[in-house]
Amino acid sequence: MSQPSRLVIATRASRLALWQAHHVKAQLLALYPDCQVELLELTTKGDQILDRTLSKVGGKGLFVKELEAALLDGRADMAVHSLKDVPVELGPPFALPIIMERADPRDAFVSNQFGSLAELPEGAVVGTSSLRRESQIRAAYPQLHVQPLRGNLDTRLSKLDAGQYAGIVLAAAGLERLGLADRIRSYLSTDESLPSAGQGALGIEIMDERADLRAWLAPLACARTTACALAERAVSRVLGGSCQVPLAAYAQADDNLLHVQALVGRPDGRLILRAQQSGPIDAAKSIGTDVARQLQAQGAQAIVDALSAPDPDQV
Ligand SMILES: NCc1[nH]cc(CCC(=O)O)c1CC(=O)O
Image (tube, rainbow, N blue to C red; front, side, top):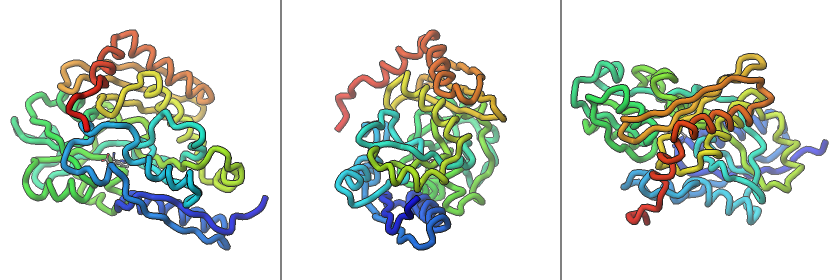
């Protein structure tokens, strides 16, 4: 196999995205020490919109489009993404051939006064940026006030420190990557807050036609995480919808057995539909599809469709 001489990684310019791109760069350099690996930093629409909740601005792949433009015109060979931010519709001319080993998929609780959601007094304000977390927190802790929290990880922590929230909930993996794990007071179990599809994993996007890159990048893939991601993303694909929908999908692989759990909730947390199924790991996609169908049989599609209807407020 030929060796790459130069590879360009397109990345968002946020601290988390840069960490992730550097992580891939380090792995590529370990494999191909003579290769020149460069980062191309881009600002995406998702990074520019900080004053409204992400779900309101809507549109899938807010963080992905500018990176894809760089792949299309050849400025970059690959784009590194947090898998959970990558739309399930991704397809030709693009491809997502590499899913890397997953970090901690759980959500984490951060607070300066309290150790966990359960310790919060009645009426305390909890900040979170996702309807998935909001729905599950409201269902388990109806006495708390859940409020939107936007911005990159550093911004969210500074809003907590400014006293606007008693506690906030965000992805453990992001905090760990930024060296902020010491701010985590407790982890939400996956039963308490089922993670979103792909949470904690990184995906590498390329142009579908780049067979050379597929071969070079293959050693970076994690087979187990890839199976989990296939199942989780199948759930999202069947149910459709946007990031305005409280939808969670989480798979665990145990030897050759895959266990898939998913839920669809109402944002107010008054209704949460759940489904789960296990099966052989090589049937990942069909297990995910079955779990989504079970949710549909309980009426989940009506919730998804109602929340995904065009919002006249949307820009
Ligand atoms: N949507 C933003 C985003 N995308 C990826 C992560 C964290 C890392 C990961 O889950 O892979 C985060 C932050 C968060 O949700 O708190």
